[in-house]
Length: 252
Image (cartoon, rainbow, N blue to C red; front, side, top):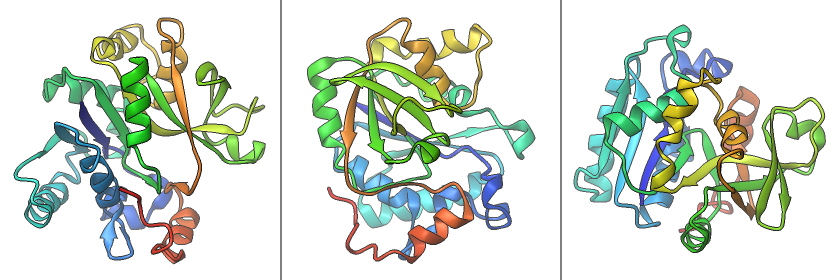
């Protein structure tokens, strides 16, 4: 299995902080958000770790990559894919960015995709084991326990482990289960990203792709408990930054 960590956005809701520092490199308890994701992914025994970013922040990610490989002994395992975009008006959007990375990095194995602004204490091996048994696209799901909060995310409706409905940022959510921006797709379905884009569908939030994919494939979900944050606003970043993160350190 390969992995792709999405770091191509410009995080305008976090400005002015992110005018100079990309959101995944913002520090929490002395290390960048993406480091926590990287450690979790590395412990999950993936073959390749691909990180997609944009031209504006490419130098910062190159510097981070060299330092991280030296510290963690990853031995050039991290690969960077750079989208030719310098500001939010040029951004690819998540789905177009995923397809760009698949093509540029020649990704052709089962693929775990993680949004680079995720902060969580999940053990992703549970999700990997579920996927290996089912061989179906699998979503990591979290219960935010609030219909108002669910409106901000992709809302998932389940029948057991099976995804029977998906609403991207709905005005009237059908449940409080939301997609965390962590997915596993089987290698045989990676071409669906290009097909989706060729059909002139929304290139941005992955939830739109999931809604579309349900027409072609069964999807399954793994429900996680614990702590999860979408570090998308200054308030959320401050909340995570101020937490006692020793208690919620990621489980390997």
